[in-house]
Image (cartoon, rainbow, N blue to C red):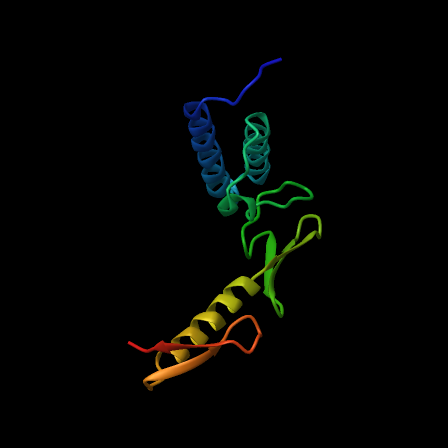
Length: 140
């Protein structure tokens, strides 16, 4: 058995090959769907062999149940629910949900920060850690 990690150049080549295979799968899907699915299978095997995590760009492009390459409008359906993107594979019926609450929370946080910095006044009192300790901060 081999010990240690693989060299970075090997991992880089594997990543390039996975990228090439997914691009080919995207090109071949309309003409030869079986070939496209085979490219996805080969890319998964490379990722497993080198113990690599599939990039999120490509991980969302194949069904994790039947391992078919998915293209919106062709063999998958995308819908937005309350706090997630719902991707349904039309080959096997598997449903994959991708949450997007992080973006909403971050947008809300930025909005609050913007409102706090735009207030006019010389001194402001801020409550820290829900205790009644106050400190004075001067606005710039």
